[in-house]
Image (tube, rainbow, N blue to C red; front, side, top):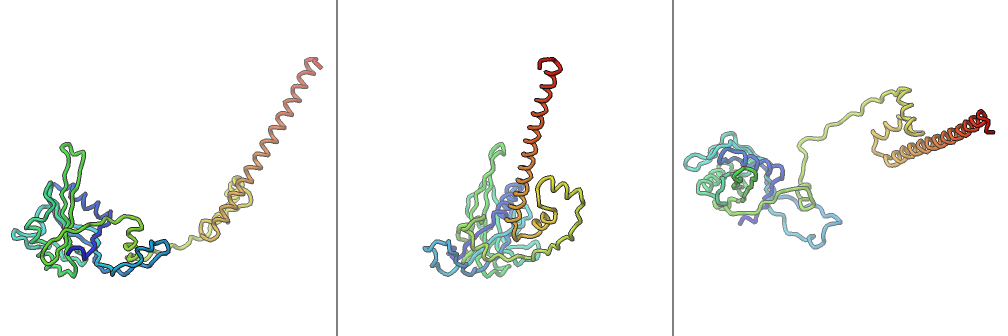
Amino acid sequence: MAAAAKLSVSSQAFAALLDCCGTAAGDCDGLLFGRAARPTAPPSFSDDDDSGATSSAPTLSICITGHASLARPSSLSDALGRFQPYSPARPATVGFFSSRRSAARRPSMREVAVARSLSKSLALTHPLVFLLVAPSASSNLSIHSFDYRAFLLVDSRLFPTSLQVVNVGPGFRGQYHTFAAESPMPWLPRPPAKGFSIGDQKAMEGMMDAFGLGRVEALVASATGQATEVEEMYSGMLRRLERLAREAEGGKKLVRRQERKNILERRKIAGLE
């Protein structure tokens, strides 16, 4: 029954949810936010395995992207297990979670009642998601562990289902295919060109040959021809280093010649020659 929907959660949202359950003073519960859709078939890529080219129709995909908790037990329902919203119902609500320390990974009668009431209150077009978390810690609080299990409400019954933690990788290409930015990237205007002083140009010439500050600015501002410009820049640096090496070698020869002259002069003064 629960295999009709694919349930996933982003790694960031899952880590935040576990941290909320682990740091709570006791048992807690809250709402799960996300999106549910029947994704279109992703485009085929040349490096894909041919064996997976033929696939069945895409199933319903439910992705958890966040949560909200009042950090106190039984905050989502009254004594009869009826859902009582603490804020206006959000369109992005896909289910709820419950954290019970050192508890069995199966829903209680109250949680089943909350799931039915919440499903009716939200009038969802997809199965309601219920995530049960059981945090535990060692005696000295040095090790924290979390047991969790996901359920889907189908025909007023909670069925266990698998939960995929979405990370970066080709296995989650469907997530990238359905991605849509909430706001466009802002336009970053190019700053006006700045004048360069003689000192800046001399400092650049001291590091490389035939590569002015104007070419450096063009290299940073434009993405075309960067490889050629970078190679030319390093070639200028190498030419500069070679010239400095030749000058240093020539300076050594002059020093040795002067040393020989000084030795001859000292011998003449001493009457050895």
